[in-house]
Amino acid sequence: MKEFDAAAHVAHMEQVMGLTIDEAWRAGVVANMAATARAAALVTEFALDDHVEPAPVFKP
Amino acid sequence: MSAFDILFRPGHEIAADVRARRISAREVTEAALDTIEALDGKLNAFTDVTAERAIEEANRVDAAMIEGKALPLAGVPYAVKNLFDIEGVVTRAGSKINRDNAPAIADASLVTQMQKAGAVLIGGVNMGEYAYDFTGENAHDGASLNPHDPARMSGGSSGGSGTAVASGMVALSLGSDTNGSIRVPSSFCGLYGLKPTFGRLSRARTFPFVASLDHLGPIARSPRDLAVAFNALQFPDPDDRHQLAQRPLDVERALGTGISGLRIAVAGGYFRDQAGSEALAAVEHVAKALGTSREVNLPEVHRARAAAYVITTSESSALHLERLQTRAGDYDPDTRDRFLSGAMVPAAWYMAAQRFRTWFRAEMEHLFETVDVILAPATPFPALLSGTKEVELAGSRVPARPNIGIFAQPISFIGLPVVAVPVWPAGTHLPIGVQVIAPAWREDIALRVAEALHQAGATAAPVASL
Image (cartoon, rainbow over all chains, first blue to last red; front, side):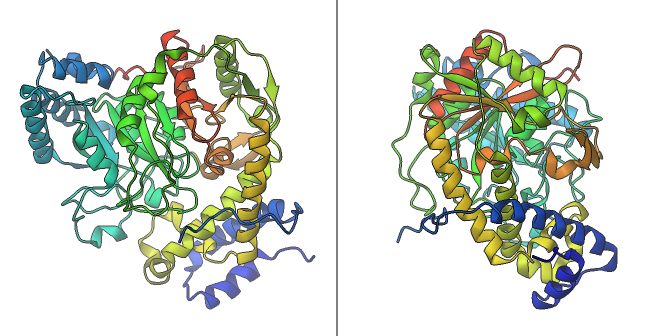
């Protein structure tokens, strides 16, 4: 998989999500996005059986 | 009695004196208000002192004492993190934005429970903005400071709770813990903190951070105070559909039953590799006091921390989306960037984290077949100097804020009950906490261990000398 480009992701998603990122904040947002991507990689690279369901349970 | 004599002791001793009518709840409340007046200018714990209400509640407790009612927390002064609704007060949740909201029309359910038990609410206390914090710093209200060294952080996000209890202004505070926000200030301020099992206590009428991970609980200066408060706080609440039906525990009764027969082990690997010298010494001290040298490894615990991180950032930002779209400039600069990036997390990452949570819970259930209690540091180091941005962890420089909680985060991720116990390692004036981690729904076990340590003098939560 291509390396995650946090700056490009932030630039795209701020449009998608209707966010306005002041240029003074951008480096911080990108750094946080990169940190989240690293954390997510630790989770997604760990293969789970298809039958492992998400934790939240809804009680009707 | 001076305010010092009245206040600077555990809450259960205050309650015993109020019940025996050796002192009135009114006198205790006035002592707390005087102490806040004297100390809070320096420490910045309180954002909303509810003096008028406190006097009214105290008068009601005194009337109940004359009628001979036995209230477990009679006259005990307490505070709540300012994300709890207090009738007539705006629930700011550490933010600027929520200050525009109308005042709360009713108390949080847990505030009502405390009132029924005879406790007296002194006010709302400072917190990191929207609870996305481990420092106790806040751009809008200023930092809540560490009473044991006011140049240092109280720890967050229940920072004002740590400050208020460690300075003796109140005996007890209710906080919230999503990734460590009760255990971190307990560690930095040298206090006992209880993060109950996920789903145990009602969250009704508190401002949410991460619905999947939010817990509420007490911080105090003795395990017995935690136990008395926890007994009072347990009740099935129809106003909270997230609460899980469980038989309540009588933890106060369990407290004195000792620890013989409990299988206790220290968490190695991830914890040992990243803990600073004080954290290692603290865990060793507690393990020795409990007579254990066994070590266990928590499976894939670094991934558990990572998954909690992903759930936290994406779920909290989804809640905040409209505010992030319209008022990003009004957020604390220290939380804004994290919330903004959290609004951009792909759903597949989030769902992978929620599935990993199921896997990790099963693995930990398996581990708890061979052990009853796991010990781990609450924080990697004692309280940092205020404003610290980077720390050294396992030989690398890393951002301070998110890494303060690396040891607390994987445990709350699967909702295990924890009591943080305060240790005072030799050679430093700063305390540091150790997590006493029990199986789900067994707060009684963690509290028994904390009480045994407290009674043996291995852990202690003295009021700071200021």
